[in-house]
Length: 308
Ligand code: BDR
Ligand code: CA
Image (cartoon, helix red, strand yellow):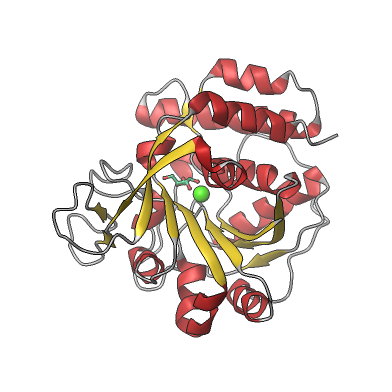
């Protein structure tokens, strides 16, 4: 079993990532750490707790950083609504957040582990960046960083930048320049996994609490995607990180040299991916360039069926 920690900012697609990771027999989800991103930390932590409670998951949830390392906070209320997880109706919350700060939890868990652990991030990379700066020895304990963020082509907030990187480019720089094995699941891939109404219907038909949650989440998500971007189906960004860990053949990757622009005013948050190797610099990231969409939806369907 591959041990993972999922750092996220739920967020509709983050919620689906939790859902897929928690029950997969090949993954062991040790903990969920939460960061400010799609919404404030107060909202994203509540949302993570709502998802684990709703699905009956016995996985601890830790709250991390409520602010990016350097820049001012940005959120994505236009996509995920006022709560960060608008759409589904949840029971009153009884699950509690863990007392320990997420960054301390990440450092402690990695340092105490005999086996290497994979770090998955589906929000701004603040918590992991802070952990690396706080205790660089954790680098020896990380098997791989798999992150949703960036793109080698266009952004989704500015022409240059994707939201997770734009929301904390300094933290992304710390993680991406760490020298660790890294897989980037960026917009180039995730924009091909569009959740059209027929997919929502296909999943709802499964008829359990996970498939209902998926369908309720995606119904709201598709509505805002249409309002903001004019698309019929919403790109299911974050769960592709988990799909890749379940079956790496879901995406095609290409090794590239990737640097994060954290200094220009126009392109702050851009992942500069040297697709053609012009710069003759060391390839430090396996960048997702394509996705087997059918395989991905089959995997999501199989993941939902693992619930009662
Ligand atoms: C990313 O930004 C968030 O809105 C999504 O949850 C995803 O992680 C896509 O740019
Ligand atoms: Ca996210």
